[in-house]
Amino acid sequence: MKVIVTGGAGFIGSHLAEKLTKIKKIKKIVIIDHLRDGSLKNLNKILSNKKIVILRRDIRNLKSIQKVFKNVYCVFHLAAIADIVPSIVNPKDYVDTNFGGTINVLEAMRLNKVKKIIYAASSSCYGLTPSKSVNEEYKISTLYPYSFSKNAGEQAVLHWSKVYGINYISLRLFNVYGPRSRTTGAYGAVMGVFLKQKLSNKPLTIVGNGKQKRDFVNVDDVVEVFIKSCFSKVKNQIFNVGTGKPKSINYLANLIGGRKIFIPKRPGEPFNSKANVNKIKRLLRWKPKIKFERGIDELLKNINYWKSAPLWNKKNIKKATEIWFKNLK
Image (cartoon, rainbow, N blue to C red; front, side, top):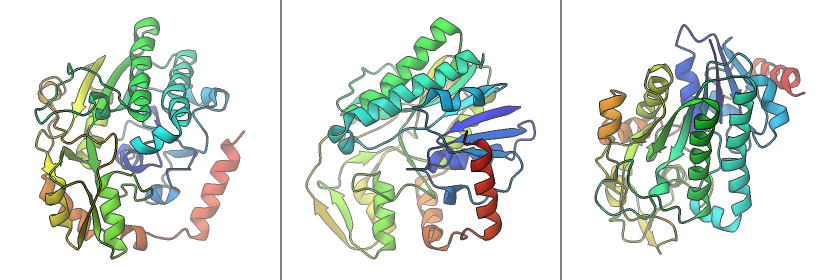
């Protein structure tokens, strides 16, 4: 069995690729990533695994990825560019990648008769949600280009399914956290920003009063959802992926520890997010297992990942170079 992971060198994608290598019936895992946001460092543990093929390609170029989709069982589509505020400044980049790139993935599937896609959607489609939990029927309110582009990608998935018979599961991810979460960019996810500040011995910057809450879900639980979605008989469904138990930013800051400073509110950031996960529990038989406090404790124990992760030795560099030259055509 051959599967594709777009964005496989990113935060969630690399964790997913690692887990997929342990599934016996999966014989080949093709990672498609342009390596501008993702990093080969994230794949260090599995780079030498015989199942792994890394293609440094851009999903905005259909011609460069089309042939790769031959004889593929399932596509895990995670490739995207994130963050709300930068999307306001450069909306076209987000639409070109998150919407246009998704259409290219769907076209590559259609042309190669691939019948299953698991799409990484975003809970940002719900807009500035109230304190109550939101289910999958909650009204869509894409206030900014990032949320618009991700939801447009989801709509493309639904349309290609209806017209061309491609089966899908769309996972509306809430606030995913865990090792390898992105620490670059001033407007990244709060977890990555806090970790970078912790590593640098800088104060944690809390937006607003810190009482806003986020539905944090551990990356290991999220990876389980992707894999369950791939092998489940359930098809053509949209699911929220969260815990339904949001935590305040102040609480998170206290768990991480250190000095804190408060900065003004920023546009596009909801005060609260809370997933209603009844549907995914019922249909996919999934529920989050990792408690927030345990997840943060494990994250802090491995906080030096960014400093202590194994460096690229000559063998790894040679293998990566061979992969790129073999597949960059």
